[in-house]
Amino acid sequence: MKISRSYLAAFALVAATVAVGAFAYWRLPDGAMIAVRYNMLGHPIGAAPKGEALAIVPAVSILVISVLALVSRAPFYQERLARSRGPFGILLMGVAAVLFTAEAAMGAKAIDPRFDVLRTVFLAVAVMLIVVGNVLGKIRQNSLFGVRTPWTLGDERVWDKTHRFTGWAMVLGGAALAVIDLFAPGGAWLIAAMVICTAGPLVLGAAHSARQWRRERQA
Image 1 (spheres, rainbow, N blue to C red):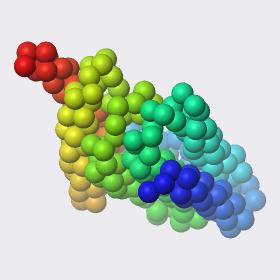
Image 2 (cartoon, one colour; image 1 turned 90 degrees about the horizontal axis):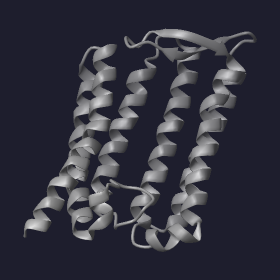
Image 3 (cartoon, helix red, strand yellow; image 1 turned 90 degrees about the vertical axis):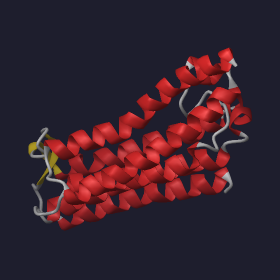
Image 4 (tube, rainbow, N blue to C red; image 1 turned 60 degrees about the horizontal axis):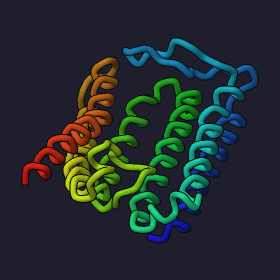
């Protein structure tokens, strides 16, 4: 996969995010309010006018994807990303896809109050974890993305072993989150599962990098 194709796909998702927001704005009546904040039980605790609420995610999507694309094109990073273009492109598309799902879910909730925003977005996060986890081991040492610890940045062998380990942990975390999302009760349990399944693999990966570095020094 060429990085340019990944950029096109990511920005197509950004455009789709804007289009979904515009469609929801058109469908909703004047003066409609949309929930933008939720408590730990998943219940809405804050709302904003439809125009303001539906503009948040598209604005974040444009900003995040543009910044990632521009930074990755900077001369300082281009050389370091030369061997990791495929994984970076997949990460770029994954972030754009999750933001698209969030905007679509927010619009669907505004149109149909029975729609479950959290479960939909968390399922998209679970899929992204599985997809990104599958390619994480192919990321070569760089200073832009990945599990960047003093130990991975200081030793390429530690970097490779850490990312293979973290990739498997991320796949397992994504699979666990998908199962929990589909079958477990909502609210605080679901939010806790999302935090653990997304942050857990990264924390384990950082710890693994330190342990692996010590093993390399003792070998």
